Length: 490
Ligand code: BES
Ligand code: MN
Ligand code: ZN
Image (tube, rainbow, N blue to C red; front, side, top):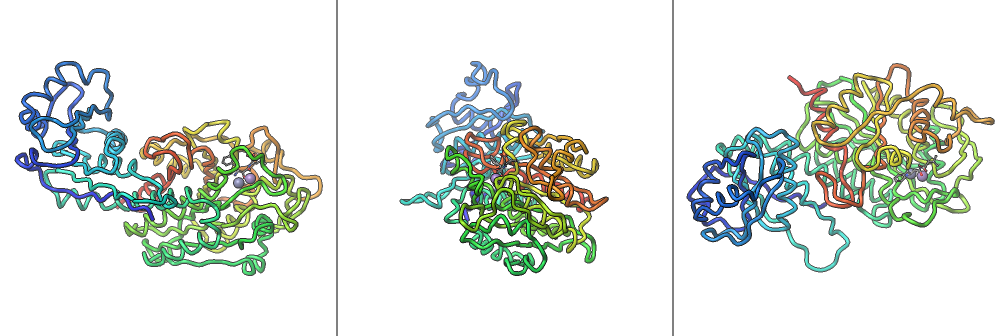
């Protein structure tokens, strides 16, 4: 797995600044105030920093923006990154400052002179998250990311405070690796092996094979993988960090390792992107890793459906009728609307088996989510305002875009089938909502449920707030925070 850069904390030492190698980050308030470390740097540079500030070099800079000075006289460092940031900057501002530092850093060592900051650890986390680089399939020499050193008033306290952030970064990096992995590398079998490896962290892992799922009557999930040489699997990750016997939160993820569309085949332009169609499962797996690493005091169960939607003589045809574990029959109008077939059985199985207190599912479910919200926001749809508001709040704090869309009977009616209980496609209008209403059928009465359609945010061609191009890991930090705020408030 791609390893996050090492982060260590040391106590502020003004006399060590002159001889520090690599890059040095210092912080200046919007009104041009330097802290003690900044003043020392300024003195070593014979007033060079004050000239930058007084000369207007930081004008029009927003919190988190930076100006880099190369090869500064009077210092061993090869660059000074001057970051504009209030001393009590918010979590998001602090992380974004770290992102700017991470971008400038490359694989160099970075020392963050953070003695006066309230959230120096968040700055380090931003730098770590932006420092991700997927090099698994690049040959040639691989460079290690340089260490990030943060100077603070109390190193032991800062180190302890950073442990959950480090766990979050580990989860995000696992998710990004899974989502970036090509489909001939990350097959259903290999994905299940990765999940089995998490048992080392204290997670209880169960894998259901095709024959197990057939016995349970999961005709919807199984219909999706019929055309693939890779066997369909259902993987369960259980974290029991809370009170024994307390109902868990269930996290459910769509894990289509590749989506050709099936017989309703997709056009070839951009088809290579469908290697990310397992992102829901990737996020669930990443969060479970984070929760286990930070020993969350909560009961959470993660369930992922691992399938491949291929074209073959055995593949499901448009017009076929399949029977779900719940018993509802589904007319497969479009074999490209496969994610909801996987989730139908996964959601039902999650509720029947684990009697959760709430269910959150994540899926790259509809192109319509991209039409509606682009790559800025994922879509949330829910039958429970309290749970949905908690997810929206967590997403806001973590700086991960999320916007709620409505559900409604009129949308559910668009999924009526002439020959079966329901059909799997309601056509183009309100595609994200009709897909959600299809899922809603498989949610038991009174079960709090939030569906997150992450089609637009899971893997993005441009940089996102915390990630370079490609897989973003969207949702790992939001769900980690949600678990903390739902279960771990005492
Ligand atoms: N995996 C796709 C959705 C998707 C599209 C994810 C683009 C990420 C980027 C999903 O399985 C799909 O094909 N959905 C169809 C549904 C339609 C046939 C009702 C879609 O959105 O076109
Ligand atoms: Mn599809
Ligand atoms: Zn899909």
